[in-house]
Length: 169
Image 1 (tube, rainbow, N blue to C red):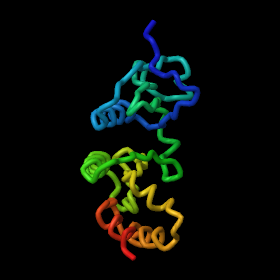
Image 2: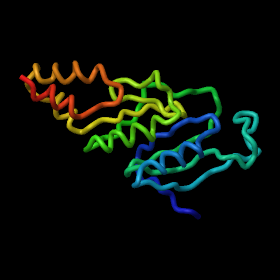
Image 3: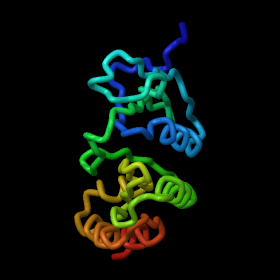
Image 4: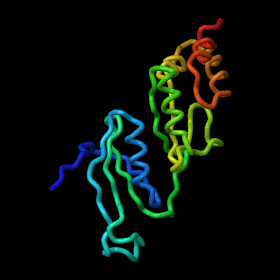
C-alpha cells in the first residue's frame, strides 16, 4: 500500500471540474519545496453521481512549502471565489515578482488587486511581502495609513514604495 503524504488533521481540498492534475503539476512546478503524492481514480461505482470516466483522476494529494492539499476532480457544480485564498509570504521583491508572474500567468487580470490574483484555474492567491505585515501592524496609525494608501493603488505589491510611505513623515 502506498504511503500517504498527508499527516495533518486538516487538509484543504481544492475542487476542480477536470483540471486537478494540471493544477497540481503547475503548483508543484512553481514552488521548490513540493511533491505529488497518491492519486485515486474513478471507478464505474457511483457513475450516476460523479459522471466521470472510469480510470480518470478523482483526487491527488500534494504538498507545497509544507502545506498539504488534496485536488479533486468533482465536476462543474462548484467554482472557486475570493472567499478563500492562499497567501504566499515573500521576503524579497524578486520573490514577489516570481510568484506573481508564475501564479498569475493565464489568470484573470481583472482580479488583480492589492497583491491578490486568480490563477488560470480560478484559485485566489495573495502574493505578499512579509515586511508589509510588520508595517500594517505598527502602532503608529499615520504610518499604517500611508502604507495602506499606497498599497490600495497597486496590483502587484511593490516593496520599495511601501517602505517609502512607511518611513515618510
